[in-house]
Length: 355
Image (cartoon, rainbow, N blue to C red; front, side):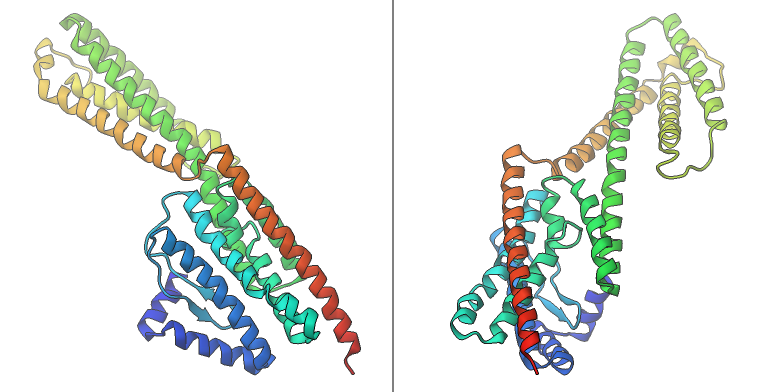
């Protein structure tokens, strides 16, 4: 939705103006009472996100209301981890639930259907946002528990969309599938990163061995490296040039590892100062090439390790943290589900009483 934020920024649409625009749009279609109730509930929901972000010291934009879509806020900096992202996401439905709670006793005392409308809308809005599909709040919350739960959310969104067709549901579904696919593929990438680190560490061990042997042994090592390199090139030439995702994952990973091995052995040959299979004892005096290769291997190990640790740490959390978020998520979802069903039944009863 970056394009939308860009347009809003160009048009200099403030949060307050966008609220009145949404109020007018909803009032024209559904009437002003419905419009006031809906915008109020969405506004408090978004304030929950903003307050949560403020507590965590994360800067955000103001809430921008978009008629028949809802409201959006932009994070000016990324959360440090999934636990912090869940905190920001949970603030919306939590405050959004608190927003319609006063309507329950008001309805019980007055039996005014307007308060029943507020209860129904509040429960539905926040319950929908708790669907475990990224970028909805529920998807961001369950991410700290397990990103595999996104699959259940995607299936649930398909079912919901079947009974309630809506173009915006398709958008949420596509975004959810995209996020799940990216995370799913990143697990494979992290495994490949481990292999890259191990291969570069292997290169460092080979260079360490190379530095401590005689010139004859150095020639023997370079010959071994050359033979391995020739075999790797031959293996690479016999591999497929393209691969089908999921079906050819193992072949794709094997090809990528082969390419990394070729780079490692080519660097080893460079350190040994080889020249198309012709070796001279004096070639091993080139300490500059050796030192540069050691530095290259070391930098690659450090860089890949930092990236891997950062990727792994984002969604990693303790069992206690997972249990807490699971309890909060399920508890709020059950409450909203019961409230939605109960309010929905009462709404149907009121409809039958209308002339």
